[in-house]
Image (tube, rainbow, N blue to C red):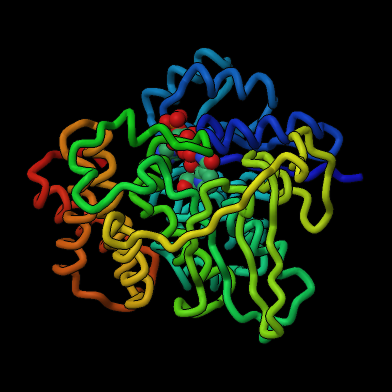
Length: 383
Ligand SMILES: NC(=O)c1ccc[n+]([C@@H]2O[C@H](COP(=O)([O-])OP(=O)(O)OC[C@H]3O[C@@H](n4cnc5c(N)ncnc54)[C@H](OP(=O)(O)O)[C@@H]3O)[C@@H](O)[C@H]2O)c1
């Protein structure tokens, strides 16, 4: 059997490390042909040694030089090299686990090369939308657990029989708080996600529910379902990863433990399934499954994202860029959590939306929205 040639972008991050763990369990099925990350030199050097990947890239030039001397092999440098690797690494599958809009070029390059795109970097679909999907929607396999759940629940079903998609949300660390109770929360509290261990940016997005808003936009593009038919429901146990409701009233739900190695592995094995080392769900001891409406007043980021998605065009790119700047500022300790939605709202209010004709146009909006967010927050370059 030919081994699957896999490129991992964002290899040193939470998803990237778990992808290497999955690949290492199947050396007879998966060959890691390329790794890309940004600044984590020692971890990257170790991954290069363990995987033996021939193509190596670090976005940060100084980190690339240090890594090359540690590894004893060339490490290409710069953001352009990351995008080029996505399109030219000789991979069958490119796992895009970069964080933020920095992943847009890589998603586009991977699809343009004819490779399958295992997509963790939801931001590239949020900001690129149809520009990305037009390059090969049928070759995108989602890694986000919710979208993997929906993808699997849709298999073999006619599109016209889908009534609604139900995206589940854990509710994050501040579930149950009331409006006005988030002004003083600390970075540590916001990073303490009750169910998932993830990178810092997505963990803060989960605390504000922006993550769920970005996921609704991602689901709209991946599954071609109108915003009115994509529902968000808070499910604190995070056991039901998402659901598809059909016109006959049937609902297919995907359940499992909270371990990202399952959807990462499925993105590689689909439509096949490989044995996984994770603990199965024990229904006898599971107890209860709760579902509740999201609280749009306490978590205004969710409503802002849904509004930006409905408006479409360049609005989601402006939303995403403003969010990235504000989240980085919160993580850096310079603004309160509540300044994230207020900044985004102002940036969206100032944005003149249009339908972008190219990735370059989207990137121009991204840059504008970052500048605008920094001006509103009165800060320098943090994201
Ligand atoms: N973590 C999860 O469980 C999870 C679940 C669902 C979806 N996702 C999505 O998956 C993506 C990755 O999330 P994560 O939690 O894995 O993030 P993370 O832990 O912060 O890792 C991000 C990775 O991207 C690299 N990186 C960042 N900026 C880069 C750039 N400009 N060029 C090249 N590499 C860059 C980092 O490199 P260095 O560390 O070397 O700087 C790191 O390897 C996000 O879009 C997130 O929303 C994550």
